[in-house]
Image (cartoon, rainbow, N blue to C red):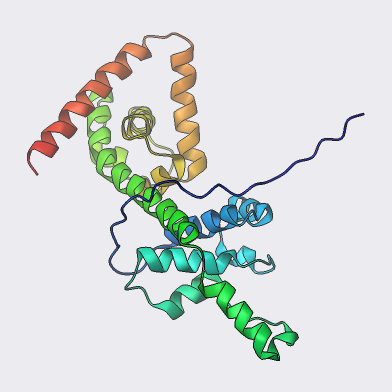
Length: 248
């Protein structure tokens, strides 16, 4: 029997460095989680990636050893130069080492150097991952209300009701539920955004986002009349978005 070995390799250094626009203020929770995940991948820390995917909470990494937190700090600091360093350290779990051997000056200096002087391509990779996630969220936030208006017109629902996903009692009516599914699908396909960005922009959880997309895709795969309907709705969505852009 041949033994199979599973390896987890960090991404190779990026060949070209895309221009990053510094963000104002402090990163939000989604940016912090993205930075931690990107840094863990960069460091080849599969365990940390799996923990984040399962829990979605930075504090769940408290017993997960590794310097990736400090890499995440460097990436966020590069993208958010005005952010409070102490607050970021706390949010990321960057704590003083408990290694008793670090009373030795040489060990302490080496540890400090490893935490603060990361290769530029590693810091850039984390910053780019956060920026791309936030840009996708901004795209979803822009398209979502327009998509809700387009699909609400189709099903006869009220656009504001389709867009409001929190604070409602009971399941939505059929026209509202159908319009919301179509709006999620159109926002993700026309905006090319992932479920994480979509959830952050709309207030829906990722499981619901994926369910809505899968529901529409299943009906499209069945070869129903929905395909023509979705093409018509997508064309109308693009028309309204172009109209908005022309007014900026």
